[in-house]
Structure formats: structure tokens, C-alpha cells
Amino acid sequence: MQPRVSSLDHLVLTVRDLGETVAFYTDLLGMQVDQFTPADGSIRFALSYGIQKINLHEAGNEFEPKAQTPLPGSADLCFLSATPLSDWIAHLGQDRIEEGPVTRTGAQGPIRSIYLRDPDGNLIEISNQL
Image 1 (cartoon, helix red, strand yellow):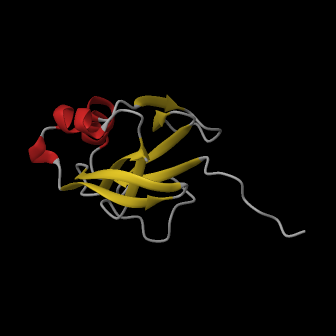
Image 2 (cartoon, rainbow, N blue to C red):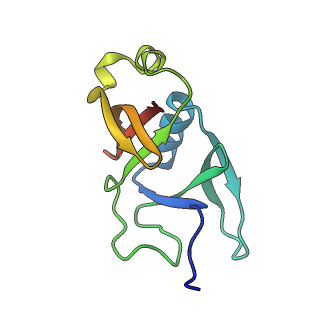
Image 3 (cartoon, rainbow, N blue to C red):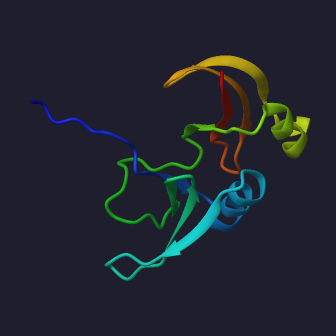
């Protein structure tokens, strides 16, 4: 039998400013910031939500191993939410919404989405499953 992956444990975002990124994801998207120290003794930060996390690397000070070309603003992330998009729009403000609500196709079927940008310009999609 061929080996297969079963789920995503975490991903890494390379960011210009850790504080600005943490504020965006915690204040606007409701994630939690976690500080942790791996075996190498460095101090690192991650954003937690549900059972997933996003590790943060500061541009120019990335941890090894890293992506071949780590760049702030190169990600396109879709987050599922049980909160209605109308509540998200009221929370974020219409001026922050780049597109939507629009119907798209998610990993498990149709979704309805809004789009905005984080401080580095990453495209952030917030979606409700239909």
C-alpha cells in the first residue's frame, strides 16, 4: 500500500512584523497566540485555532529548516467558520472586505466566502460551509 498523509498539522507564515501579525489574527480573527520553545532553545510564536496552528517566522530571521523562498505576503488561506458571514462583515467592517460574499468550492463542498488581506498582504478567505 502506498503511504498517504491524513491531515495538516501546521503551516508556516513568514511575516514582516510579528506584533502586527499577531494583533491581526488574534483581534480580528479570534485566534490565540502561543509562545513555545523547541529543543533548540529558540523562542517561537504560533497562532492557534481549533486543532490547528500557524507557526510564525519573521522575515530575515526564519528558523531552519525553512521554505526555499520564504516571502511575506505569498499565502492564500481559507478558514472555515460557523459564524455567519454577515456577522464577520459587521465585525471586520465593509472597508476591509476585498470581495464577497461569493460562492466557492471548498475541500468538502460548496462554501460562501469573503476575502480580506492580512498585514503582509496574504489573501485571507473566511467561509461558511453550505
